[in-house]
Length: 164
Image (cartoon, rainbow, N blue to C red; front, side, top):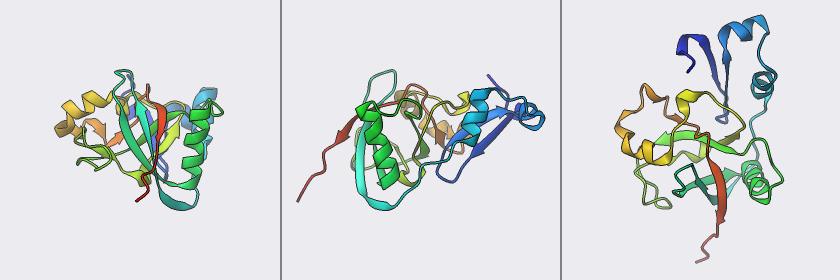
């Protein structure tokens, strides 16, 4: 595990997490993957009506996210179609309260912070159930800044919208 003092953690406006050893960043000796991640542009687009997607982590329990940005919605749909193979994992900032669309969990991801990543540092990785079980510890040493980037996350379905 990388110690915080040796990690340059950058949280871009749209929530993309990238990391590289601070010395490597300043010396220009990052790995090609770290350079690629650091130069990645967050996905941003026009705000639209919410679209929901279900994701899973390794424990295979479903967790629903809500996207309100058209570019991110398009990106999520490309992931589900198998057209996007790199930035396929879900990242966002935890809100410590349930959402109506995700009632089985005591937390949800703030839609304005959700993005997708290829690789991230270990400090924000966790399964959904572990976050639920340790929610009182989240946003401190566990998931600093409330950022959650489950490495095993994968989108599994778009949730059909309900027409009234």
